[in-house]
Image (tube, rainbow, N blue to C red):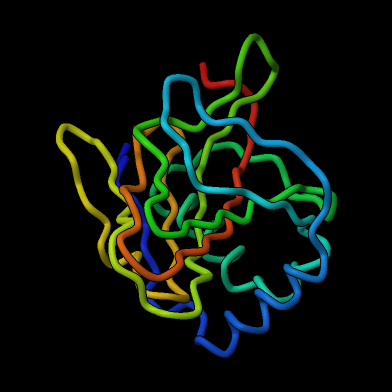
Length: 180
């Protein structure tokens, strides 16, 4: 099995990203988020239901499913309009330390894939996504607004400190039955 990440450059234009951000900002909902245990998290998170932005992110959703089919072949539950997505906001000096995305405790399902869309409207410096697979691998190409990345949620990853500008990402965690 290949545990590298899938990457799509310029999946969305800057104009598409601006329209998506407008729609997201109009549809924030109340929900809660907690940092992975033992991880430093200073970025902020807002939430939106998939149903309110689904038509605008179809290419992203297709990319996520194609990445799974080509690289991982995980059994995934279908996404519903009620699925809550995280809108991550990084401002100068904020970060999210090394962590994995997973399900706490004994549950019947696991997070299988972490899917990220760069929703930044302008360029920024820092806030690099890094994956740890036998060594740190910076995913600098993900810094391009409108780009997307997908990787297995059990891979240790982080976002280092933002030096300047603002970084926004839309995160979808795709679930499936527990790993065996």
